Length: 176
Image (cartoon, rainbow, N blue to C red; front, side, top):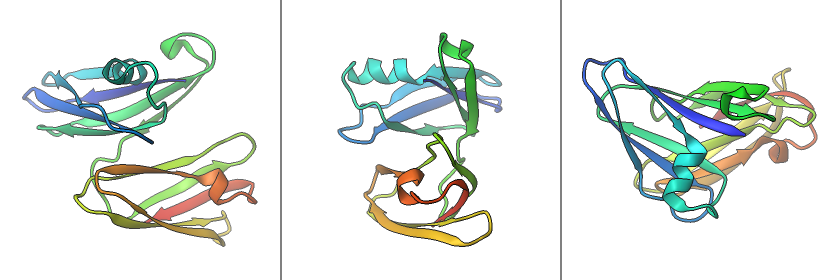
C-alpha cells in the first residue's frame, strides 16, 4: 500500500497547513507543517512523512486531520500492488470530509469476499462524545446497530467486517 494526501489551495493567498497523524494506539506525533502556494497543490507521501516524525517502529494504522488558515481541498489517493508509488496496479481516491458533522452517510460499503471496509471517526472536540452506527442491507433491512464513545481529540476505527460478520454484499451505514 502507498498512500498520498493531496492538498489544493484555490485561494489567492498561500495556505499554512498542519497535518496531524492520529495513530490507532500510542501518542500522536507533533503535526507536520507545510505551505501550499496560492492556486497550488502539494502531495504528501503519508508513510514517509509519518515515519520521519515517529520512527520506523511506530503504529501503522493512522488517521489524518488537516488544519489550514485558508480554505483548501484535500483528498487521499491509495495505491496497492507491486510496483513503486503510483505505478501500482490498484488505486482509489477519496475526498476528505470538509468539516465536522453530526450525521454522516455511507451509501456503499462493499462487504464481500476479501474486501475490508472501515469507517474512521475523529472527535475534534474537547470532551468525550457518543456515536452510533446503523448498518443496513441493500434491501433496507437493519443488519446491526453499534454504539460506543470516542474520547476527545481521539480517533476510532469501525471494522465493518467484524460488525456485520454474517452478511455478504453492499452495506450502507448511518453514523450519528
